Image (cartoon, rainbow, N blue to C red; front, side, top):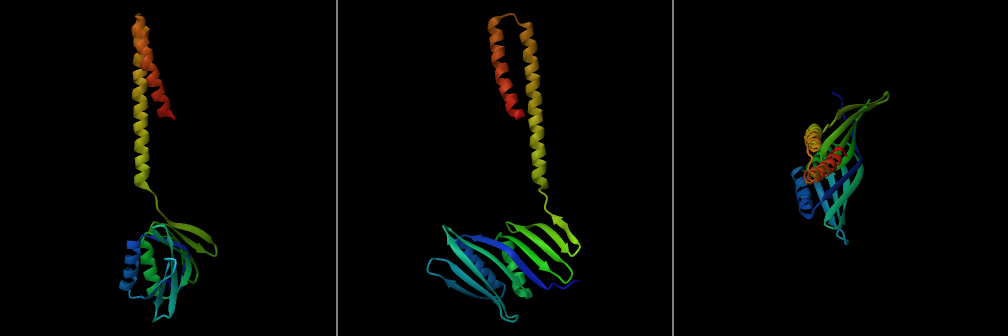
Length: 196
């Protein structure tokens, strides 16, 4: 199995509420990563995460924006403990990120959206290829189901229009014809809306 040389956060964004920020700090305590927290004058917070054994650190600056703390970062990590802690944090706290996992002959590019991996691309000297891509199968099935419901509604409206037209052709009474014309106008509008 190939040895990972480094993990590069090309771009990462975390957006946390005050409660989530407290959980975030506790989370890194549980990961056994040394952490220093600085609260700045403007309410921003700076977290310095350190892998003492590997002599590596990363600084996360959370800017206070209304009722959230927002951190945008890019960094390169080599030590496994800090690398794994950051990966778990992006997942647990529903972050968005583009992460390069760099190996000797290739790079795996992970695209995170809302904490979930949505796409993995392998990049080599000969080009790139998509290894994994999330497909919203349930959403696609729902859209197909809804479109079939619309088709069924259109069919029902068309049948009702045809019946009213037949009834109109057979009726001689002007009052009944006026009522039929009124219902036809309503159904025609409904049909127009469905087909749009």
